[in-house]
Image 1: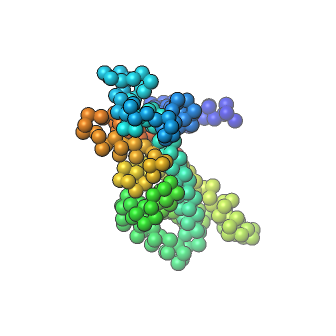
Image 2: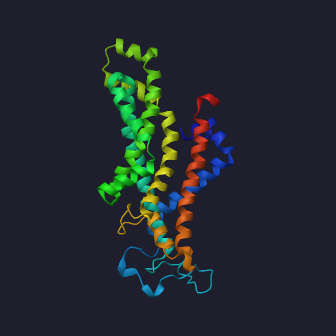
Length: 291
C-alpha cells in the first residue's frame, strides 16, 4: 500500500510542486514542535515554581544581555519564550483541529440532510446559513464569546458555530447532484433506508472538496482563536495560547521588548503559511476540472 502511494500521481505532482513541499516541511516541523516540544524544553512556563522574576524580559541569547539558557529570551514573568511558544502552539493547534472536526461533522450532516431531503428542511437549513453568512465570522465569534465567557470549550463552540456553514453549503450542493444519479435510484429501488443510502453511497462521493476546506479552515481557526485571545475574550491566562502570548508582548512592544510578541507571531505565521501552501496544492490536485 505504501509503495503504491509513493508511486501515485498525487505524490509525483507533489514532488514537482515546490510550494507544496515547503508547506509540508513547515507543517512537519510545527507538528514536531507541538507533539514533542513540551517534552524537550527544560521549563514548564506555566508552573509558577519554575519561574524567576529576576529573569524577566531577558533579550534573545544572541543580543547583549541575553542568556544562553533562553534562546529567544523571556517575557515579563521570566518564562522561557521557547517553552511558552511550544506550549502555546499546542493549545492553538488543538483548538484549530478540534473546531475543524466539529464544524465539519455538523456542517456535513446538515448539508447531507438538506440536499437529500430537500423541501422545507433544505430551505430552513439554507436560510439559517444565509443569515449567518451575512455577518462577519469574527463578529459572530466575539458575540458568542461575550455571551458564554472565556475558556477552551467556549472557543470551540464559537469556532464551530462560525465554521459549519461552508461545509453545509458545499455538501448540500454536491448532494443535490448525487441524488439524481442512477446508483442512488438503484439503492432506493433495492429498498435501502435513507440513512444507509446517505452514509454508504452519497457521503463517500461528496467528501473530496471537504478535504481542502478542512485543511484551510484549520489555519483560519488558529487565526480567529489568536484574535479572540488577543482581545481578551478567548483562552484564559491559565491555558494561554499563541494569541495571548502576543497580547502580553504587545503591551510592552513599544518599550523595545519586541521579542515577547514577535516570536509568537512568527510561529502563528509559520503554521498558517504552511497550512495554506499545502491547502492550495490539495485544492488544485483534488479539483476534477483541472484533470
